[in-house]
Image 1 (spheres, rainbow, N blue to C red):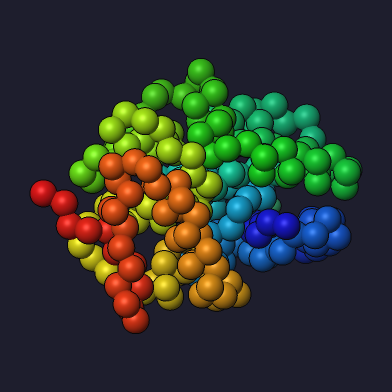
Image 2 (image 1 turned 90 degrees about the horizontal axis):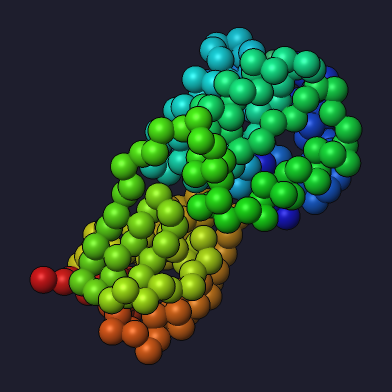
Length: 238
Ligand code: CA
C-alpha cells in the first residue's frame, strides 16, 4: 500500500483515479488545484503523485518542476496524466522529470500496474537519470565523519563501502548526517521522514534498529546514539 496524491481538477476523473487506486489498496489524497496540492505536500510526502497537465491555477509541468526542485519532494515519483494522443504533453512531462505518464481515458488495470512499476523502481532509477534529454545536475553529497551520502543517487557509504539501506533508513541517516550533534525526538523524525501522523512512534524505533544493523561492523557503528528519554542523534564529528 502506498500513499498517493492525485492532482486533478475534473471531478469525474479525480474520483475515478481515487476509486481505482483505493480499490488497489492505496491511500489517496485528492487535490483539485496546485494550491491544494502544495498545501498537502507541506503536510506529508506521498509515495507517488498523479498529476494532471491543465489545472485551474497553473500547469502540471511547472508544478512538476517545483516538486523536483524541492529537497523534500525531489525523489517522489510523478506520473503525468495526459490527454490522448498528445505527444507534446508526454515529452514535456518526461523532460520536466516525470517518471511515467498515463493517457486519458485510462484502463484501471493499466493504471494500477504502472503505479506499482513506479513504486518498485528505486528512487535512484527514476527517469531523471535515465532520460538523455535531461542535463545532469550537480549531485548533492553529505559527508559526516567516515560516512558519505549521495542524496541524488540515494547511495551511502562508510569509508568507501556501500551501505544497504531502505529509503526510510536512508532518509533517517541523511537527516542525522546533515546535522551532527543535533538531537531529534521520535516525533520530529516521524515528521521529517514519514511526514504524517498515522504512523506510530515505535515505527521510528524499528527503523532506527535496522539502521544501526546496517551500520554494525563498520567504523560508523557508533555514529548514531540514543539520547535517553529524548530521541536519537548523530555524534558530533570533527
Ligand atoms: Ca485538467
